[in-house]
Image (cartoon, rainbow, N blue to C red; front, side, top):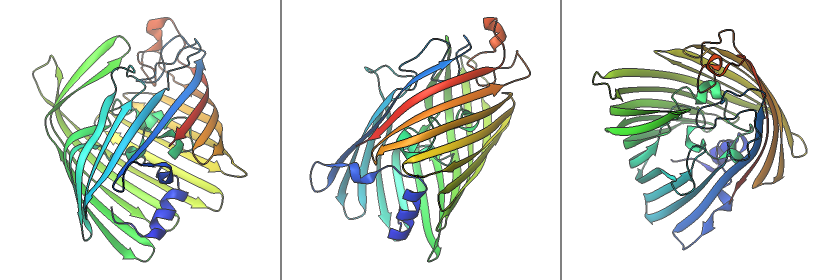
Amino acid sequence: MLLSHKYTLVLLSLGVVANAQAAIELTDNVFLSGFGTTSISKTDNTTPLFINREITDETCYDCDTLFGLQLDANIFDGLKASAQVVKRTQDDWSDPELEWAYLSYEFNDFEVRAGRLRLPVFMISEFYFVGQAYVWARPPVEVYDAILGTTSYDGVSFAWNYELSDELLLTVSPYYGFERTTKVALGSTIFHFESDYTTGIYLDLTGFNYRIHAGFLQSKYILLPATKPDKLSVYTVGAEYSMDAWQFMAEVEYDDLQTNWYASVAYAFDGFTPYIVYGESHDLRESKGVTVGARYDVTPAISVNAEYQTLTSEDPFNRAQFVAPPIYFGEKEDVDLFSITINFVF
């Protein structure tokens, strides 16, 4: 992506990228970096909370644990390669996931990527697993769990980066993904989605102290063992704005089955960043949630979050943000969650 020094500083100040200075230089052209998160989490409900995390009323020391390694290589002028392996929250340490592995080529204001790529649906999709890159203990589940934690596709993308002015950059990026089968666990139930294709486009408008992101995704898939294909269309729009020590962020996700949104406010001072998030999910999932927390940056590469989240629902038969309706566990539909997380990059 072609960004001037000014735009790079803007993105760093908004928390859009991780600490690139932490990368280890293996050779003049090859760089290794890494990131990780671990936590102590506990709810007051026996129903497992959040897809791919499944936090309950038993204190959990690994529900949010993830670790990733990324290798970047400059092959020659304009041609680069990147690979990222992540032990996600749902993975065993012995079975991490290849999250991306692609070749990219930049020429003038254009970039082409091919391989396994990150789905660019949401504001922080590109660095979803890098907890050090955003202020919360975990991304707002109302929006970021909307497509069952799917984060990558196998295919190609094309990006056009155009400087509208000295302080305004427009990025337009269509993409296409080929056939792929993914596995999603909801509690003890395993779903296999066989996609025929995944296609979409996103637009980013980046100014001196703000960013606007809009995305569209469509996928034709079969939920195995069914034989009849289905189609899902997802629309997203989000924005973030910084003013002195304040940071404001909001995002909306709409698809054929649901509507979800959140709004976040944070204020940074002396290494501390208290924040509050309000979010809602409707239709397929029904919930309202409030999150209050604070982040402390121990160093530029290490941070600690303390967070309290409460989620309410009016329908005990609706899954809300649980992996299954709480009435199946003989539980109430409301839940409180306490978390302490540690993030790091290198």
